[in-house]
Every structure is written in C-alpha cells, then in structure tokens.
Length: 250
Image 1 (cartoon, helix red, strand yellow):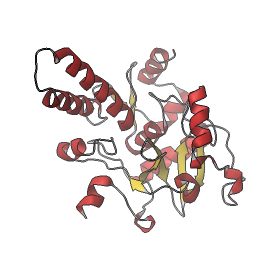
Image 2: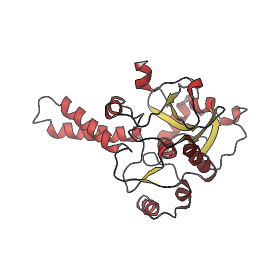
Image 3: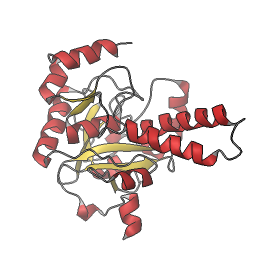
Image 4: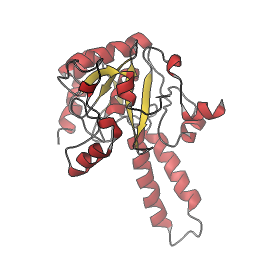
C-alpha cells in the first residue's frame, strides 16, 4: 500500500471524474498528463492535435518516431472521428495511455510527501471541486489553451490549471512539476560546482539545493501564481493575464 501511495499508480476502476491522471512515456523519460472525464474519456493538451510534446525540432521528430504512443488516433474506432481543431483533444483512456500504466497526480500533499516524489507528480496546492475541474477542461476543449510550450505551457500545465485555476505571471517556467524538477537539478548542479573547491562532501549541498528549488517551484507556494477564470484565459481580457501574455510573447 505504501508503494502505491508513493508512486501514485491506480487501477482503472478507481478513476473519478475530474481526476488529473498521467502515464509515463519512453520508460520514465517524461509523463503525459490529462483530465479524466467519464466513461473512459480523457481531455488532454498536445503540441498539435494528436502529438504530446514538442517544439518542432529534429529531436522531437526522433522522439515521436521512436515512441509507441505514435499510433494514429484514426486507428481507434472510438477516437478516430473526434474533432481536433487545436491542441486540446478528447480521447479514450486506452489511446491516452498508449500501453502505459495509469497514475493519478496528487493535490494538497504534505511537504514531506512532495519532496519524496522526486519526479514532480504531486503538489501542495489543493484541488478545486470536480465540477469546476471538468468545466475548465471541457471549455478549453472547445476553445483551446494557447500555444504549446514545453517549459511554459505543456500538458501538465494544462491539467494543473484545470485542477486549480492558477496561471503563472511573468517569464518563469510554468506550473509543471516535471519542469520544476529540471530547474531544481540545474540549480543543484550549479551549487555543487560553485562549492566544489571548498567542500569535500557535496552530496548534502546538492540535495538540499535540489529540494529547496523544487519546493519553491511548486504551484502551491509560488508568489507569481494567480487564479483566473477559464473564460478569461481564452479571451485574454483579464489585466493580469494580459500582462502575462505580453511578457511571455517572446
């Protein structure tokens, strides 16, 4: 039971409407995230319809060509004819998982549990009610979630927004715990390099820096997180969100 608690793996029959779910891709290289709706349906955000990550580089094309998740949605009789006008799509649970295991992202966790889940698969921020989560997901399915950006506006950012309603102001990275982990790793490595001459034992320094950086990047404690209604996300008529759009334009 403790192992399942730590690693978030669940069975399909445990799913509830409004759950933030994810599955690992290419082993445990990265995770794809979405919001479970009902009757085996998932709403999730992709770089373009039917793709899960990417910035249009040669590396992305290599990842896609190597991934088992590349099977065309048209091969599925359930998902084949669904509209894909933007990066927010609806698919069946099986297509979302693409053969991977099912996990549920956790909200409102303690600091201890947050730091124990080193891959960024939980947050200290509380989740909103399921009806609010589903409303955001379904609204964005019809209206889009902007341009996909790997470090600022990715599938995990989408799912976290649906669950909490928070957006990040300024030019910092987005809500994604995966990205927060990468940033924390860079900070830890920089700290270790800076103290390499003075300290004979660098492991505690690196670990401490990593933990602090990860915690400060969490959506539950960030000072640049602002709650914005989903209608204003799409229309951009909120003053704070308009400022964010201008600052992240480039």
